[in-house]
Amino acid sequence: MTAIPGFTDHSARLAGQHIAWSQGGDGPPVLLPHGFPQTRAMWRGIAPGLARDVTVIAPDLRGYGESGKPDGVAAQSFREMAGDQLRLMAHLGFARFDLVGHDRGARVGHRLALDAPETLRSLTLMDIAPTLEVLERLTAPLATAYYHWFFLAQPAPLPERLIAADPDAFFERCLAGWAMGSRHSTPRRWRFTGGPGAIPRPSLACATTIARRTRSTLCLMGPTGPGAWTAPRWCSTAPTA
Image (tube, rainbow, N blue to C red; front, side, top):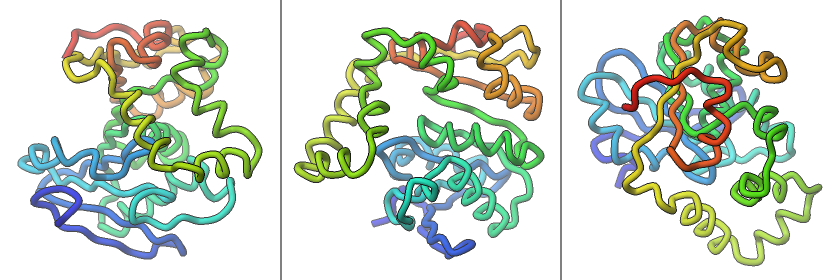
């Protein structure tokens, strides 16, 4: 069984890192990096439909799924993950591409846009807000919903030991908790205006730079999730999708 119905599964060693991905369709290339704690299989419900019009590349990020799991915190940085995606797309012969990322995959796209904006035709970020903006507006509900940020930031090996006691329970709690109430939700949609007035000064470095470098940048947020609590402050409202 393939990770995504109708797709073919592949893997390659790129700059010493094993990367696995699924690919399908024909047309302009679209890269789909997944979120935490998921794998490329999260796209199985929509990727086949997209593949009717475009070439879809859905990778497992390093540390996830069938991709390699390097040791050390530095090896798990968003910059390293973004580098993997650039090397993968170059390996496939795509110099420019569209990127649609969810959660952690969106932060990888965020980093990629800062490091190599010339490679992106468009950038869609799903369910993230600039980290600094989130932390500066931290509230009790937000901290409760994002408890894993602070838990996983504890010095090793505390999180590893606690998760290892029952990894299935932690994984399932993450997925079940974040999916609550989302089945019938309609995503909210915002588009960066690209001007310096669109985002407050603390977030300019990590957000408006993307809008300047990639002329088409779209943010999609669930209507009740933590991302939606901060997004209206730094994005202009567009019609609901």
